[in-house]
Amino acid sequence: MHQEKFRLYLLSELFNFTGMHERIGKFAHHLPNIQQEIFDVAEKLSRQLPGYPDDRISRAANYFKEKLEAVTVHLHSLLGNLVGSSKDLAGRADGLLQWIVNRSKLLETFSSVPFSTETYLQLFKEKQKIAVSYLKALNARPNEPLFEELLEWRNVSAQKEQLLPGMLFSEQTLATIAAKLPATLKALSAVKGVGPEKTARYGAALLLMIRTYQQESSGAADQASLF
Image 1 (cartoon, rainbow, N blue to C red):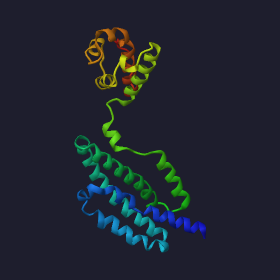
Image 2 (image 1 turned 90 degrees about the vertical axis):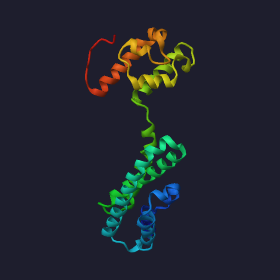
Image 3 (image 1 turned 30 degrees about the horizontal axis):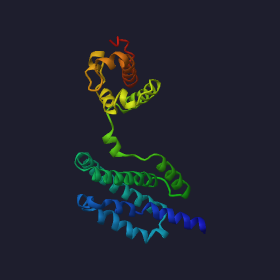
Image 4 (image 1 turned 45 degrees about the horizontal axis):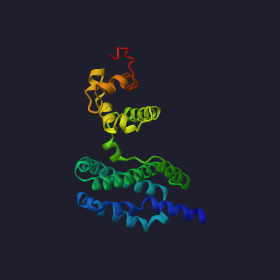
């Protein structure tokens, strides 16, 4: 009896869109049909769930999955514009999208396999481990892995020389290097914040990291001279 009540509770959570409703806020006018197509339908469904057989659960999961997919596409197109105009709204949109994507994964699963407590809990754990952030992706620096490697190299080098990391290279300078991928010492020296003196001291190490990153990214083993 207790297991069945717990199963019913999890099933009701699957079709509970309160979290989405709370996050909609100022985006409601961009989604004029969401009240009728998602929230109203979910409310009616919640009263009928105790008697739902597996096939109806699957159909309901598929219905909401498709509705959320449409919302995701629309919000994702909005997010690109919001990043440049309002960080607050962009953050809210990102939070909403994360909620939708996580719920969509659950719905997609149960649109094709019978609902069970075990499967739901396993999927929920996976969802907690992997949270997709669209805002982070949109704000990601060009060649982010290289930038992170350059940061680590800077911190280690600064420690050896007993300097503050920012005295060696600023994060903005390293971000520019990662974005521009200078191929020669001359090009590296021209980057703002580098200059001839730092190029002479650190240029070979920086160009080696850049070349290695490019080779690993492209799969090519270009042995051309760094200089």
